[in-house]
Length: 331
Ligand code: UDP
Ligand code: MG
Image (spheres, rainbow, N blue to C red):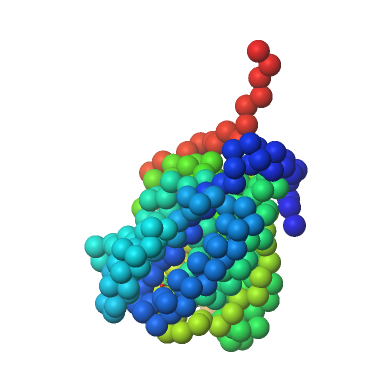
């Protein structure tokens, strides 16, 4: 499933030992699933440790996103009893993307995997992700192979959204959410994006680097209910569009020109009716002409403003201009 050349990392791994892994889990009111999540993630970690795929310095990071239930107490207790577990508490609910970002920025390990607390993404897939990393990939996307567990509505809207985003020039991995692995190199590049409106899956694509994917079947939520009701899903979808695309602004310019041409044609028609026939009621042409003219001029002006807004938008994001993947030099 790779989409770039493989540089096998196993030779370096043999010298330095296996890489350390951090698994980052954002949690919002997840008391019902947490014990199961601890167990599932520990199981994967232990099996990778025994197989010598990851080092003993690997850690589990849980971020409590201002939960109102017992989530924090559970995390606190876990972190006190287990040296591999790190619990992070945000001051209040900041949303999935911010919570995940906070967790990612706290890690220091060689590899970082982000996964939801509800076990929908099957933690056992992390093994395949680490294997892809070992083949030389810096980013490994978890991609849903099918959406059997989704309702028709969810599948239709979600897949439609990926198509729409692509039409707007936003590069997203189809059916990939936030289950992914990043190497330290990719994560450091990712941290250079200072934007406040986070749409992590878009930023990861901006970062680039050699990537690969692991397909998996998404399960039902293990327990508890989705923290993404329709309202939040819509606002997240809009966040993606508005944080990555200026196509809506450009659309105003296009509309302005289309309206301009149409009204020009109408203006000729109105003049024709007014001058060459006697079917025009008095006042008709003198009302309609300025209306058409001003309407289209206004839309065009808005479009021009939009073009500048698009520039300002790109500037204020202060996104890094490039990331170096490798420098080869013969001294
Ligand atoms: N989450 C979070 N903050 C929020 C909402 C959700 O940290 O404000 C976490 C949640 O605990 C879970 C992940 O984000 O680990 C994904 O949420 P959920 O499973 O409810 O979303 P869905 O899978 O239904 O899209
Ligand atoms: Mg979920």
